[in-house]
Length: 68
Image (cartoon, rainbow, N blue to C red; front, side, top):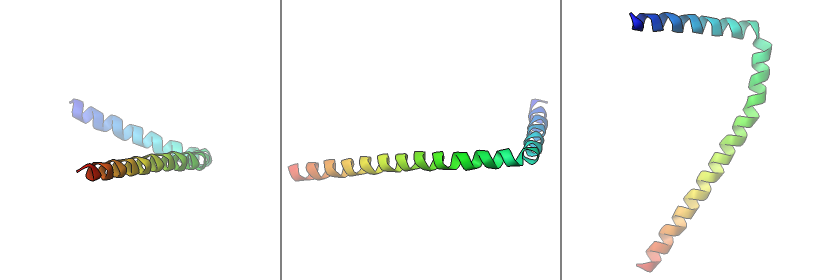
């Protein structure tokens, strides 16, 4: 019975979400416009950190290779 109830509740929540997007389309677009720059900033920071980490790992491997 619990499985069916979760499907019904999920369908109701999806329907409410679709109705909310339809009714507040302008606000939804404003939210997207405001969140895209923040996502780009965070994604860029993560890419920079990953690149720095990779460079450090490469330098450590080169030093290890020189010691052999």
